[in-house]
Image (cartoon, rainbow, N blue to C red):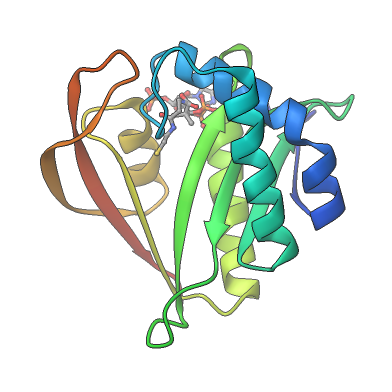
Length: 176
Ligand SMILES: CC(C)(COP(=O)(O)OP(=O)(O)OC[C@H]1O[C@@H](n2cnc3c(N)ncnc32)[C@H](O)[C@@H]1OP(=O)(O)O)[C@@H](O)C(=O)NCCC(=O)NCCS
């Protein structure tokens, strides 16, 4: 169960300090076959560079970075809310990079992270959330359970880490 898991939003300094632990989660997910922007092999320096960029985005208040931690403060999972949007979409945010380390899956960690995303979005005045995910992947059920609506699928939108095409399904959620 997730009683021993804490979900929280990181500040900019914490985000920068968490780059190695976040890279561990990203590399594990890609090596496990997740289509999350990266191909195999994913070098560690590339994964760390990605998270340094995320930490910079947190410091500019362009994104919110959430983590799920175990009782020792080790990072089990993460998700982001991209707050910076065009002038005509101030009420909208994108949800990105929901990742749970393989060792921590099927314990409700992702469900907890997505509930926390809703809370952060509300606190930031965001009422329309959008995300996309691999068509037919494990995350689709999770999003549907969390009240997200599927709006459609684009075949061959992206590649799996091994190079095979995959479709992408877009989801939205209204918060009110
Ligand atoms: C998709 C992903 C984030 C799910 O993370 P997770 O923490 O395992 O998710 P949850 O535990 O909340 O739910 C997953 C499943 O475990 C089940 N579950 C949750 N708590 C449970 C428990 N205590 N005991 C048994 N099963 C449980 C859920 O019902 C769900 O079942 P389902 O897949 O059959 O619908 C994770 O698999 C992952 O990181 N995948 C790779 C990256 C990825 O694809 N991310 C999505 C990008 S958009």
